[in-house]
Amino acid sequence: GLIAGAIMLLPAGYWKGMLAGLVVAVLLGWTLLSHGLSLPFMLGLFFFMLFGLVIGAVIYRYAVVLRPMPRGRVVLVTAAVSIACWVAALGQECLSYPHDFVEKALRHPRVYIPPNEVDRVEADLRTFIVKYLDTEYPPGGVIGYLRLAAAGRPVVVNIPTQPTPATIAPMVPAWVWWSRTVLSVVLMYVAVWSVTRDLAKPPKAPKPAADGAEELAPAPS
Image (tube, rainbow, N blue to C red):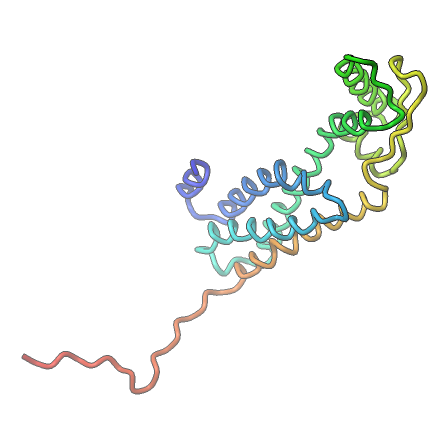
């Protein structure tokens, strides 16, 4: 509410709509949409379309006074906001990967957890996957995760607490990761554009009064 009020106080400008859209897009991408990407059968793509309509409506609300805007400018604003939302969602997925990997590894039947040592195994797994990304997919971190996800290769866990190595399958197959990653940004742009494209159109002229519908003058007193 405070952010929306602050944006409302700004003078009119196309960047006002873009700023409002960016705030909503990044918040949605970082929170809800980042989790939507992990839904099975690519169901999360539906939310990129749904929230894309919400983001488009926010941009339209703050920029409607400027109609008609140049079409190229509307395309630029739509693309910038869509990409920002997509980057936020993908960035959160990257940063959450070590935690997600540890949770998946702890459920693996080949991962041995000694009695009362869950915390130790969890810490070892977290340290392992961070170093694994650094060495196998340099420079590690976000870029390392992107390289690992794009390759779709399993991770072989070999740490002191494990008597035998355990092979952890990728979160999703490579073709699924590539498909949802590309489709998510495309569907986000299409959904936002379906609303913001009207900013390039002039406002509709008021309909003329019908013949014989002239307002009657008041009778003289």
